[in-house]
Image 1 (cartoon, rainbow, N blue to C red):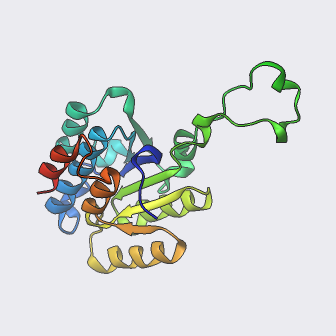
Image 2 (tube, rainbow, N blue to C red):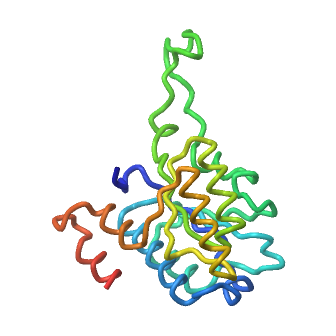
Length: 208
């Protein structure tokens, strides 16, 4: 099973000004988060940012925010402020899976179980997820998304915790729960699929 850009949404969890300095390998993790944001723009993948208690932990790190502003159409990026550790508890699932559009015409008279949901409601059920801390907000968000029947792909080299033990324990638990563990380059080349893709050279420049 490979990632499909047309079925993907990117969720970037809590890359915040006052949180990132405490994270293990923060510069490398941030560099990969920026790459993911730019990849999403190149591949027309919608992006959701989350910010945990932004009044205390600050806004999204300027480097990532700038990449999103520069590369991505504004309508394709949304920011969810939250207090719950799981962004799903704050409505992320509703953002990622919009309600079906009203059924048109005579189909309204059909019983609900026979009415076909709109294509939009069923699209982009693959969530590419990265962020901090891996064992808290990222983990809880991922587990809730899995419970809501999304496919969850966790980008391990764009995730961190304050300690290696906590980060790796999160990855072990996520893998056991059914999440796919990938790297930034895996995401890049699976979204591309071919060296003939129009964005190939731009993506190749990003990951080199």
